[in-house]
Image (tube, rainbow, N blue to C red; front, side, top):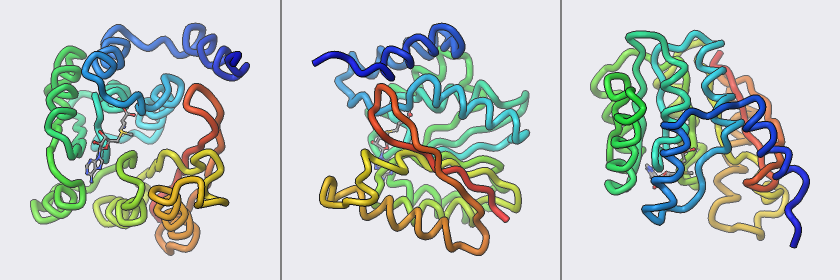
Length: 221
Ligand code: SAM
């Protein structure tokens, strides 16, 4: 089977425009070496996250779903001095690899990887009375996407930017039988985003090396 044109174009755009640094390239390689699933964001999406962090002036970023820290490093690279990123990861093995990659990227002073079910970590962040997060990236177990959106509102403030990955999922949002595990959670989250009084959102569809997908972008009112 020949490679679809948009995969070759993605490679071209990554080399020509996006320029992931060696720490980012190494983070992806470490995930492959450790036998982790290749489910990190694409380099062009990672760069978009970094730019959104910078454009929104975010100083405090919350990530749900770390894997090997690829998107973590992109976003942390967009933080100013004194900025902070907390990322939630269920699997200790993933968290260990992510910490090593963050350290290698020179970002250990900005990034905290918290191990555990994200719903527990998010509740802990609330009870610790942490300052509001300015930017939230949701990319973990899709069943909990709607709950994560609610948490983004709760732990955010008016103006907080929320990005929810995998919002189209090969079109499964219209045909949940394609993926009965993940599609219902994504659909619930999109419905919630569309009707939540404190969220104002949109969804951009994408194609590339990760297939046909998209991301939702919202602002907390
Ligand atoms: N954001 C990462 C990137 O682009 O580089 C990719 C994250 S990957 C799609 C999803 C991650 O979420 C996996 O590492 C998985 O172990 C983690 N995860 C799954 N369920 C979780 C949960 N309930 N709480 C926290 N993390 C979870």
